Amino acid sequence: MKQNIIITGGAGYVGASLCEALNALPEVGSIVVYDELIRNDRRFFFDRGEGAVLDKVRFVRGDILDTRRLSKACNGMNVMVHLAAFVDEPFTYSQHTQYDQVNAYGALSVTRALEENPQIQRLVHLSSSAVYGFREGINPSDAPNPQNGYALSKWRGEQYLEGYAAESGIELILVRAAHIFGSNRTCRFDTLVHRFVFEALTGGRISLFGSGNQVRPFVALHHVVEVLQRAASGERPENLLIADFQCELNAMLAWIRSRIPAVEYQYLTPAIEHPSQSFVHLRGLDESMLDQALKDFRQRLLI
Image (cartoon, rainbow, N blue to C red; front, side):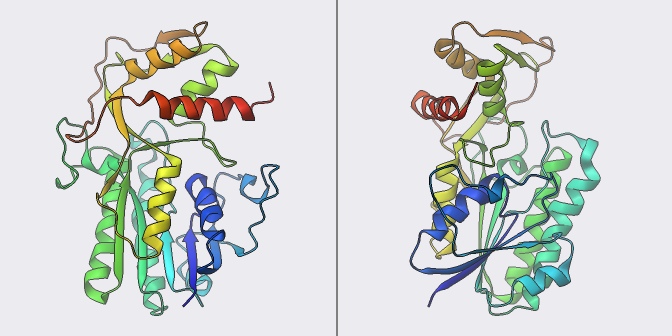
């Protein structure tokens, strides 16, 4: 049977690359992208000059909280990939209401739409490593310990979906992604790696918050897309966490300075020690993966 897949938030950063990957699969019959375009970003609809055509994709503009519209968009689908989320950098409490509305209550809206579309028997949900909180020596199987508004909203969203899956019997595949990096046509530039690279290439100066000793986990976009693509077909990932490596921000700075020696840098709040998030199984900074990301950005820049 052909897979007919609806992707909430499918016009966003991860969604654009996932659509390309799924569109190329012969077992995928159709794809519905359900997205509100809350950032007023239209890059999803334009190609990269490579001739790729998303001939299986149909776009439906809609708010994740509009359960009636979402339910209607689910007609004829048998798999859902739930990507719709609100995220801002840095993760603070300043956007707490919007985090709750989109990330938590949006997941609840998803459950209601699924109740009205019982033909959908597989739900893939992309959550965030933020739910683990900030501490060292984390195991991916550890219980969540969210410590900011964004993380709390993502954890609540997980709980809504897990509760619905337990009650309905739908297959739920939940994964949590680290900080995602990698170039595509809908690339975000407020994330750490992208901000560093863009600032270094265009302005020649990088700014860091805190001392730079804080550790963060990172994952390449293509790895996230591969996991989601397989999950849509029913393949469960080996780990709940999708991550490739972790490092101090100072190590990230040292890497980019070694590639762009002329870059300047400044610590905006050097006396502040921000907490780390590190995992027991992750290796240190992967220069080859970052080098590929830098190469991709350089190739796409016109100036």
